Length: 195
Image 1 (tube, rainbow, N blue to C red):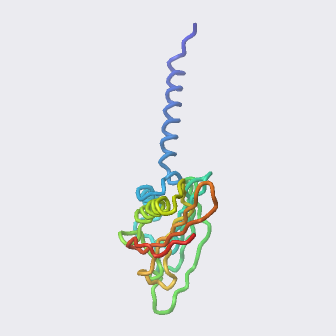
Image 2 (image 1 turned 120 degrees about the vertical axis):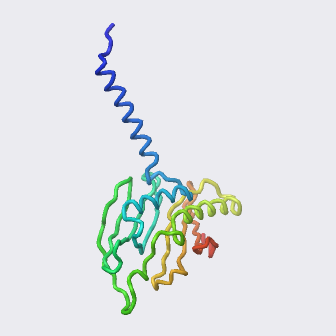
Image 3 (image 1 turned 90 degrees about the vertical axis):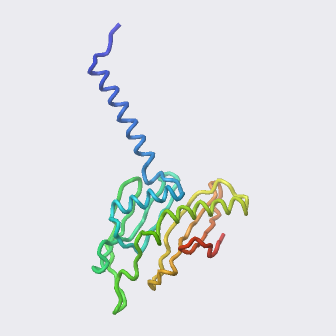
């Protein structure tokens, strides 16, 4: 009976180790984060890692696609005074820039007045928590189970009035196409629910 050489044995162990690392890193990826406060905190951390803690946004959406997982779509800049922004998507852990956008703002105003930053006031942790709350509400009030996130986003007013910013959430049952939409204030108060 032949025995494996020590070199081949080490290669096999190394291969198994690399597969375990790959599987572990994929399970923690942004695309596989749950629609919870904790999961959305990880997504916010990914945004801050890519664009910095002081980035300015005009659009930010988390969309769940069954075969892909979470995708993030955002319009962002690090320098609002430049009036130049970039549209980016994160899908399957790969960032892709899709276009550049030039803003026009009314004379006498600053571009930053029409943008938001991720902070204590506006954040994805709160949005993820509201997704959980919305799912619980539908389960208890409508007896609907197996709900999944379709889309969650920050709805920032075009007039720059940040006090009117809303968290918006769309949920769907896994087996049915009926969409349930929730709109919340920044403080987490329900504004309305549509279905």
